[in-house]
Image (tube, rainbow, N blue to C red; front, side, top):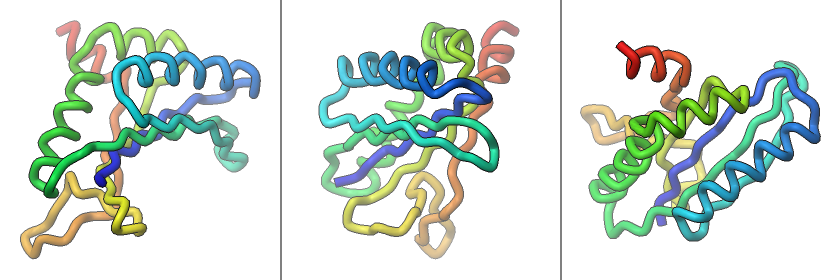
Length: 136
């Protein structure tokens, strides 16, 4: 089973507010996808909370998982309401990668080199830039 892993950053906010934002995202995602796991974490060093979202992708092979994963991310990033609502919540950036349950290392199957090896770096998105681009 392939997993689309998103990391949503919530800068400088109280724990209760972060929990409310997590619940909002949880409701949004579970209404669209089954098996979604939404967790809340805190990064002391950067003084921010992160919402960890795992979306299972049922695909027979990596090629189909990549296609489905890109379609899911396009739904998020191409939907003005999503990016507008996220920025209203104070969420201005997110990271994501496509992982594999069989491979427990943090690889990103969206980025595969010439030798067929998956990269370990996440794809980073600035939601403010996405909104600015959409308005141009």
